Every structure is written in C-alpha cells, then in structure tokens.
Length: 251
Image 1 (spheres, one colour):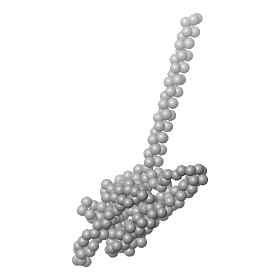
Image 2 (cartoon, one colour):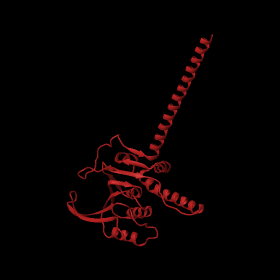
Image 3 (cartoon, one colour):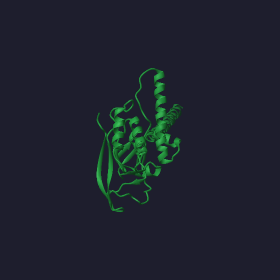
C-alpha cells in the first residue's frame, strides 16, 4: 500500500500569546488512494489513527488531481469530526475527489495560481442492462453525497451545483471565492489577502466550450450555405442572359 498522505509537525511561536505551539501539517499529494478504500478496513483506520495521534489545529496542503471518491468521503468525514481547527491550503490543484476533501476545512485558502475542478463521479461497469442500471443508480447516489459537501460549504442550491458538476467546471482562485468554494487567497509570505477580490475571474466549463464550438460550426455552415445559394442564383441569371442573346441573334 502506497501512502498518498504525509504528516509533519513543527514548533511555531505565537506572537499573540507569546507561547510555542505544535503545528500539525497534513500533506495530500498525487492521486487520492491508488487502491480503492471500498471494503478496505486497514487503510482508512491507519489514516484515522495518524489523524487522532495528536492535538491542536491542522493545516492540510492539497495538490491532487483526485482519485477514489470513497477515500475522499472518509477523509472528509474524519477531518470534519476532528476537534481542532482545520485549515485547507490548495497550492496546486484540488480536482474531483480532492475538491471534496477541501470542503472539510473550516477555512479554505488557495494560491493565486491554483485551480479547483468539480465534475460528476465516474466508474467502470461490466454486465447486462441490470448491472448498467445499478451502476447508474450508484453514481447518482454518489453525486448526491458530493453535492452535500459542496452545499454545506458554498450555500449554493443543489440544482446549480449539479449543473456545475455536469459541465466539468474549472475555477481559478477568484471564481472559487466568488462561488464560495474557497475563502481567501494565500499570499507569498503566507499571509492572507485581505483586499477586495478582483472582478476578473475564470470559470472554464467543458460543456460550454463544446457548445460554443458547435454554435460556431453551425453558423459557419449557414453562411457557407447562403453563399452557395447566392452563387447558384448567379449562375442561373448568367445562363438566362446567354439564352436571351442567342434568341436575339437567332432573329
């Protein structure tokens, strides 16, 4: 079993209380669980034991393209139940299942160059129509559970969140803050940006891009068809003029 998480503890001096405290840091890098946590009792228990093997606030650094949604759900629940404050910091990408884990943070911070992506859950199924329908029902239930986490964090309607997942939505830090998936921007020195969020933000939707491309192709075909119609009419006029000249000369 290859661990995708790593714990780091370090002593931090608190200027306000003039005391030294232990800061716990959880690093989540790469794919969330190479092996599925479904029906796995050992790996989730190992993660939970390491999580509970200390006290105090936790900073979770995420840079992951996603992975096993079962593992993400269990990690989300464990972090939500943890007694200390959980601060999530996204320094690269929090996509798919990793975005679910990010929702467990009491505060979610993103780097100015980081990205977040949400989409519908996926699986591989094999069998007859009954097996396919059971897979569809399972994916629908998983999607509902994921929306629960997004809804609690963002306060958005379930319908709108479902549409964003359908479209495979990518967000930069400003759009993530605007929609409620993140709270603040991480500055280079580690401080939090207290300035007003810029008006320029980026939201990329795979579905929107495909639809836009199809609209442009349809418009191009329409113009081409109109040009062909005009050229066709022009040929007919030229042919008519030639016939008139022939008739005139015949006389």
